[in-house]
Length: 375
Image (tube, rainbow, N blue to C red; front, side):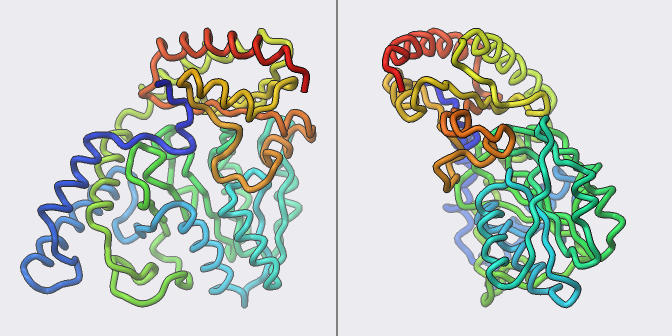
């Protein structure tokens, strides 16, 4: 099997699963219990949190454990909107965001908040001049993904931060789900950051929200003692420790992993460009982990399933996309055909050049077979 759908989810690393199982079996106590088993679990949770904080270069008090980036994004947008509606009702985001951000923004819009979508330049980057134009004294939050999940475009976070600094009542939230573990991240550039463990070979059901400790927001979930006042519920100690292990395995190797994936990307893109009906949608600002392209004369679903028959797994768009046409691709190219035919290859450091070579051979076979059928 060749798995090139890592942006949707990665396969759990055996070492991560091993930690999860060990904690499940050896630390049965509720972290909130005062007996010996509870104390033992609390000590392990404190250790894991300290380790995660060190790996991410944040403070332990800035870590909020969530079920994943979707919950983290909801917590920030709803929490800031609720807490600071007296300051203003204006939120800025983009059409490149994960649906957990765009759908939450739409929900807040139905509650009276004003949502603006900053323009995207031809290179896929946010138009900083347009962002300046949209910012007002009523803007309480700017929510932007570090790396777009469909095109892999890495945004100019420092440039965005510089603009937001002129508005002290406005916070900056960065969805780093597709960035963490792949590129270097400076958390000093943001007020909030979200991620999911299952994007970095961790378990499904655990993620993080990093919140600067001087910021107060309203809760999304109430009731039940937890690791923080901002997210109630019994701490999921096995998942927390599994997240620690996933970060421990990937963070120290970001640069070497990046270089390896870039070699795979360069090979794939160089071959894909040779096909007349293939349009490369990813830009020079896309990280190498994601290759988005369109085969304009073949239905993407047909192509995906044909590749699956060869035991190769890729995707048509973001696994969490809720529209028929890929939002990010359409936002960039304004072309229905390109957007509706988009296909995504998402790589990981565990993929190999042998897999790429096999993919290329199978791609050519499937392409020529399906090209005989006009769409």
